[in-house]
Image: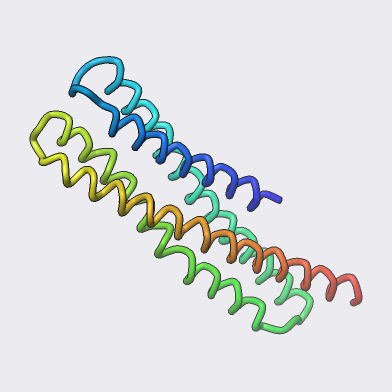
Amino acid sequence: MMGRALLIVGAAATLGLAATAVFGYMLTGLVGPEMSRHVLIALASCLLLLFSHCWIMFYLIGTGKAIKEAVNEHKLDPDFIEETKRYKNRSYPPLMLAMALAMATFILGGGAATQVLPVWIHHVLFWAALAAQLRSLWIEKTVLDANEKLMADIDRKLARA
């Protein structure tokens, strides 16, 4: 249940990134209310993205620890523990990439707005961040679904014991 809620937050962050781009491409100047709206939506979207990815990582750590304790306490198959490690190994690198690209896009957007950096750098970073975010959402969904199934399997085994 918690994983699904965090996926919804991640999806909202993705929609926020898309809205940020729409407002960014509609800018007519580097100052004014349009720029303020662009920056505010970008900030909110980045924070949501960071929140969702960090909490999904913590969620996988927490469920992995609970599974490890259950396996050790009830002498279950140790492959359950290895499976949780695979989930983390599969999801953490793309999540970290999505977070890094989103932060770089936001931070270097200031450089583009002040004309210290060429605008095309901000644009390229944005499209890379959006692609990484979409990929991360897909990976998160598959990993969280598998994690939920694994926990249900363990619960069934414990109920039978």
